[in-house]
Image (cartoon, rainbow, N blue to C red; front, side, top):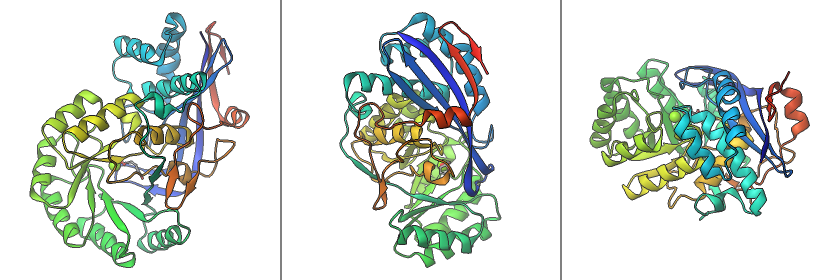
Length: 379
Ligand code: MUC
Ligand code: MG
C-alpha cells in the first residue's frame, strides 16, 4: 500500500552559467517525488526540465501541481499493486505529462527494486553494461573559457567527449567557436547541439562547415516541428544527425524510427514519459537501425541514476551518453555521490536505484508540498 506521495521543488545553483539557444541557466530546479509505503519502503523519483517553460511544455511548478492534484490522489485511491499497473492507470487517466509520469515511475521502480532486492536495470529489461561513457557540455558562452574547462576535464579523466551548445549567435560566429575548440582538442570527440535554432537553409550551410571541420555529431539542428527537414539533412550529409527534442513518447518515436528521420536518437527518460518508455524507444530505434545516445534533461543524481539504469539495458550505445547533470550542480542530494570515474559513470549496483538520498537535506532545501494518504497538505 502506498502511504504517501510527497513532491518537493529543490532549486540548486549551477557551477556556472549554462547557455543554450533557448535559455541561460543559473540554477536547476529538481522536482523530487518521495513515495513511502505502509510496509516501510521508500522510493525517490525526479523530473527536471530546462529553463522553466523554455524547453518543454511542462515546468517544475506544473509537474509538482499536476502530481499533487491528479497523480497522487489517483494512486492513493486505486493502490495499484505494481509499477506496471500504476503506469497503466496513469496513462489511462492522465494525458501527456510525460515528465511527471517519469518521476512517479522512477520512485515506484526504486521501491519495487528494493522490495525484490534487484537494481532497477534488472526490472526494465536487464543491464548489458555496468559503465557508460559521459560527455560534458561546454556552454559558458566564451570560447577560451570552454577550451580551458575542456582541457581540465580531460586532465582529470572526467570527460573526453564535448558537446557545444550553439544556435544563439550568427552561424559564422558559432562555427568559428566550434572549430576553435576542435582545434584545441584534436583528439576529443566534439559534437554540437543547435536546440532547433536553425532554419533548413541555415542548417545546410552550418552543417557543411561543421562536417568539414571534423565535428562528429549534429543534434536537433532544426525545429522539432519540421521532421521532413531533419530527414533531408540526414540524407544530405555524412556526418551523423541526431534527433533530440522531436523524440518524445514511444508512439512518436516509432513513427520517426519507421521513417528513419535521423541517424541517432537522443533518448531522455523525462521526454519519453518514463524508464520503460525510454527502454522501448531504445529497443525500437535499435531494430530500425538507428544509433542510440543517452540524453539528459540536466537531471540531478536521482534522475541521472534512473537514466543510467535505462541506458545500461540498451543493446548498443555507440554514441555514448551525456549523463553529467549532477556535475553541473553546486550541491549533491545523495549521501554518496554517483561514481564518476575514468571518463564515465559506473551504473549503481544496489537494489532499486542503488542510491541513498539525503532526505534531511532535500526536505531542508525544498519548498515543499506534501500529500499523504489522508490528503493532508503540510507546508
Ligand atoms: C539538450 O537539448 O540536449 C543536454 C545537455 C545540455 O547541456 O543540455 C541538455 C539539453
Ligand atoms: Mg539536445
